[in-house]
Length: 305
Image 1: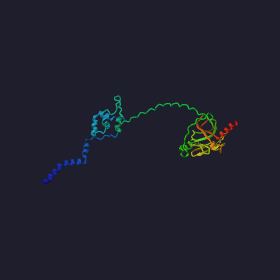
Image 2: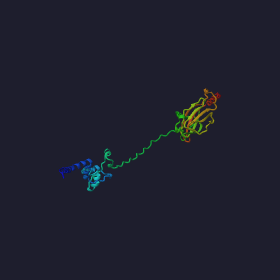
Image 3: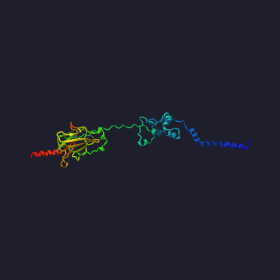
Image 4: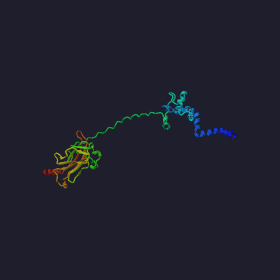
């Protein structure tokens, strides 16, 4: 063998460790090989800590466990306890009965702890508040009867016309129903009473150019006789369908044809409502004055002179 080949062989033997070291570091195998030599067998840490486990207390009572976690020998304090601490009789992980009361964790700190390490805390059930007795309702004075003194007039209740009627008033179950039309004593003129199954709803009565008095009842169905003349009076009426409600027209049958300028129109005196009372239900009271009534009164006055 020539001296040159021997020199190359010696040089190759001397540089082999350095080449191996460079190859290991280039492939990233040095750290994994060395850590594999130093690392202890893997500890099964997939098991979540049970309720009542105190990770911080266990680490505070066992400083060497902290060092083992930092070096990678243990994944957590509970894993160390399962692997070694329980057999070695280490304390601090669970509350020992009769020695140390459980310390409440402040809410701010409990929110920063990992979800797996927070023990389940049962929320207290709020007791129902004691029932407060309702205040007594003052007694309501009943409304006067139909044949008593004139009913107290109320402010007119404006309601939408048929074109702008509310949807709830157009439904059959929400509509009011006039069950009967009659007369009653009381007032200065002629009192007309409408009996309804619900509280009345009406618009401001108006006098038409032909002398008739028009009363609109929005959201109201007419179930009485559609037209006629009230008994023992000269007042005639006619009920017409008005969109989702009823239009009621009053006229003086004995004064028909008289000039409106001479007082031949039906005149409104008052409109009021009465609440249910004993055997009477909801009522709409309309007081009117008829030209024929004034004419008859003048004739009686002239005859008595």
